[in-house]
Image (cartoon, rainbow, N blue to C red; front, side):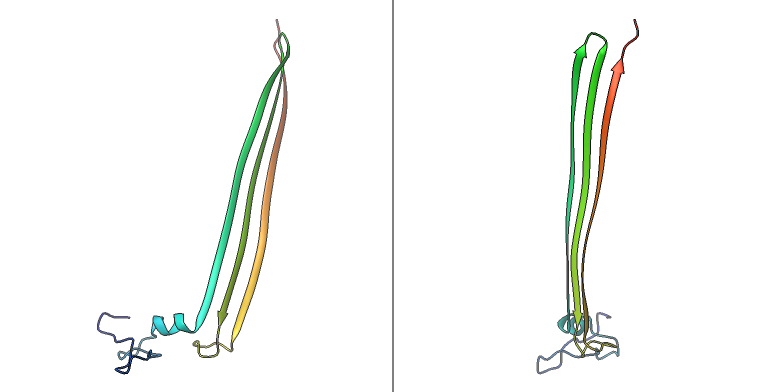
Length: 106
């Protein structure tokens, strides 16, 4: 919308199109709803253990997780909409576990 556009009529109601013929983004926001939530987790732990002289063990673990929930709804007044919506939810995780045994040669 250009700076010369008027998003409201003189009575204060929203215009569907501005006075310059462009889609009014305020009107589109009024007739739709959407939200997205993301949660991320990254964690790592490790330990080193000396078992005896020249022999050691190392353990490490890493986790990465992402969960996303989102939805969108557009009512029949939204341009080219028939009153539709969707809800999605997904979760992705990855793990890495390392077991390392070290032996030092004399």
